[in-house]
Length: 328
Image 1: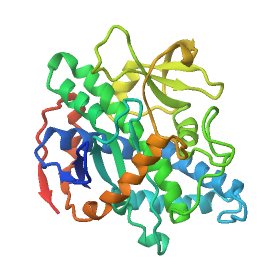
Image 2: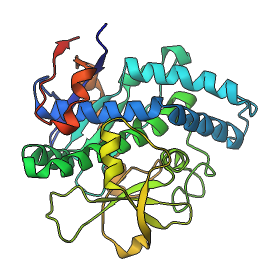
Image 3: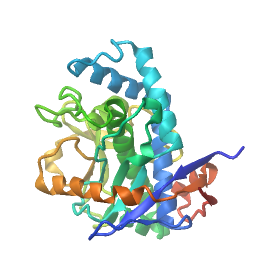
């Protein structure tokens, strides 16, 4: 039987709330479907599942009045596995969003309240928004054979962003019906606030071995993906191996991520991309999140496309791959 995945991928312009679904034969659809598939594979791996278990146990242990698992790892797994099944069956709508005006913000998930049982949770009613200008930089690289390695860097960039947003942040939405923030203890050094934690970076620290950041290479142009680094528990930056990134694009995962070179002071570099924070007081970011609510009715009308997973896996090394799709 053919292994298929169903995704809804759409575009949002700079002005207004109109959402347009990408055609199934567009390169944007193929490239983002590929990044989603890599992210799902990382989440569904043995280590990815165990890291979600640790997030569930940490949340339950630190949330006042919460006693969902009582430190029982198997009870937490019984919560994690259905979430991953729901994620595979009904992956959130992904919006390539041109209202994200800062290059530094790679994407975000704005938590929406939902009601019902855990079994009735519909990830597709939630949204993952990706930086539109950065997606265009990826498709630009894909159309130039000399930039194939840069294209795979972008595949890695968006795959890790989707793990952060659709894995950790959405998992907290699932656990709490979208009503409760992450406890401040659930975070990584340098992130979160006194009142609210950062589940995405907690998850990255547990699974990846550090939080993922991209820094400008002064020898490259402005369309670059940036050089991927990890920020460790001591807030030091380490370059992620390019050979390892190619392996990730082949679905060959090593956790924690493989680094190269020595530790670097992050303040000495210029950021070109990072994942979202669960809590923000930045007026620009708050305005951005409030705008997402205006597009939810439109998102519910989108249909999506079912794709052949074997073809999707070819995309990182052949960006022009034509996906066989069925409208669902």
